[in-house]
Length: 511
View 1 (cartoon, rainbow, N blue to C red):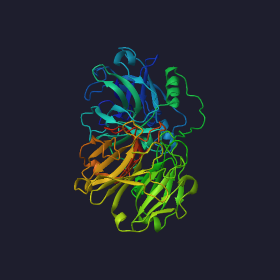
View 2 (view 1 turned 180 degrees about the vertical axis):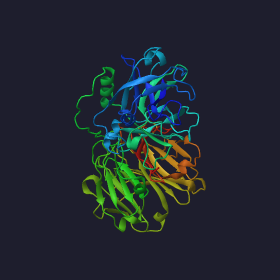
View 3 (view 1 turned 90 degrees about the horizontal axis):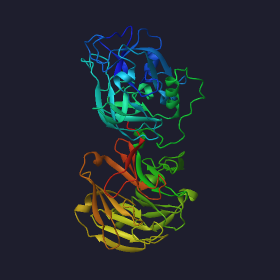
View 4 (view 1 turned 120 degrees about the vertical axis):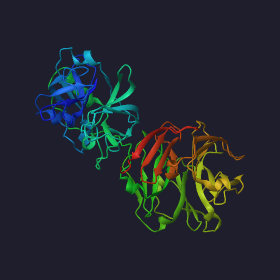
């Protein structure tokens, strides 16, 4: 039921085909899904045909299912071809085809099930016909199993797979695909931003609209063989799971800290930039962020922040920011959401040589019953210390969990959260070789049981900053945020003790 198109100027058996389409299940049994920009390209063409399972070199009569004349196209009137605007979310079209001597298209080929979704993360099979004989001399369909993520800023999905050259537009993105029966759920089609790809026109980066009410309404029109009526102006989704700014900007996000800074019941994120600017990204409780708030403009002082963490050390139910500076001074900024950072804060310890060696700090609830008032410190020599009942002006009680050792010298990044589902927090460690481990049940008596999340990995060596918060509002601090070396930023929603959660892109890579 997946095929390609031809018309005058792109004739059957020629050097190139045109876009990709797939038969979708409808009561009319004559509807083929493709991309909106493909539909626009065929609107004024003549002798248009759809050829399912096209086989190059065979005549129309000898094609596996014959050919089906395209008699009408249904395109959302608000869609602009190959646009980069929000209306690229509407890059969907349906072609109505006449029956051939073998019957109606769906009866002859079978059909895929058109499926709306509110998610961006899917495991899907993407199919398409690269059109040019220079890249696809046999004019065969290519197929790629992919994992999708959101294209930030749009109601669109993104996937990566080699050889998706021009011509694959309109091709189906199929969930639960069974190649033996030819069944599955279509959750997208190649298209969207800039005609389905990025600004560099890389063949390995491909986009698709996410089907919502607009796409379903268009299919209803096509099924009823009626002209799409006037629509209200297109309004993109107001949900913002992405973070503002491109990846090159986020390469300068030096330090991250998460907590309930505004007393909303879910987490926000603070970013300290390399130029000293400090920004608060208010969480919306649904895995996204509202409009950013600048806490401090670029300045020389905050360039010297070396490591930070967030906890409720003041016991006010509003998170505070703890900062270790390059001279060893440690400062607590209480109730950041209401007080901001444009004040002296509380000096926890004066500049000193000892705390210059505090390489990583991570607040958590390892011992405390209610507030996040415990502080884990990894020292340069590999010693690991837990401070409990940290409060304004006091580091509380000190508990040595590890003597100086070579292994923990390689603990590159620390974060903590409720990954095991317990109210007592776990300690997560990213090692220099890219291994990722979780220590469940860490207490004043020692580290908890080690749970491996990832083996040593070249990819995870590029994890340059990480933090954990309750961004989805499920009541657990288990959403892991990673800022990669290229500026891409990712959230792993509902991360568990031994596995990463669902991947959600917050900042897209540049390519």
